[in-house]
Amino acid sequence: MPKTYPLFRRERRIPRLLLVVEEYVPGVLLAATALIISADVVMRYGFNSPITGASEVALICVVWLVYLAAAGVARRGVHINIDFLVNRVKPRTIAIFDVVVETITLVILGVLLWAATEYFLTGRFTALPATGMSKSFVTLAVLISLALMMVHSAVFLVRALLGVRDPRYRRYASPIESEEIEDPDTRALRRVDSELAGGRTRGDTPRRSASSPTEAADSDEGSDR
Image (cartoon, rainbow, N blue to C red; front, side, top):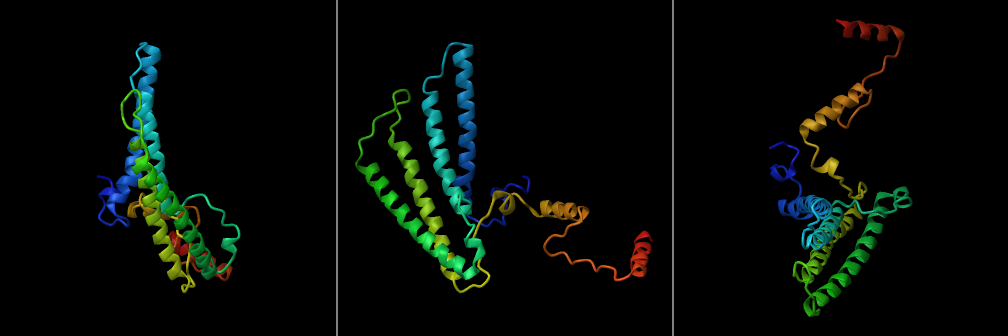
């Protein structure tokens, strides 16, 4: 199995279950939605025999895809935010701001989760006409997503509280390219590309610039040898 698949790596930073629920399952649902819609279009307009319930199954897949992926984006800390003013203040001020933001987020998510849970338990759900599946299954995706986002927000809140005393505090944001897909071999290739482009990566020692034309000529001769 290639090293770029974090699910099969021992050195993983997050629980494997979260990877499956918040990233792999939405990926499978996205592929299933595309296949179902494509097959239904071909059968409908090519053979005049549409697939019964295809649109309902695709709708359910999209709903679960959106809410599970939203929890994954919340875990990575890459939801859309405006940080123009926040990035201009000191790290401890950023931590205080994050404490306020995460507290408000937890309150809002808690209210939404309470309302969604009450609706899920007391509501009278009808069945979808083609598949016969209860609409409560769609509402369940909202409950799971809100619960996961509350957990991630609570983790960020604790991190921000600890960061109030840390002068090196930074806001957490982890795109998939830098967290899991980039394995040691990929980092080595990126370092080589950076060196060929004339740049340096973190951990590289800067080269001492020549203080005179004589030293520059000596260094060129040494490199030729």
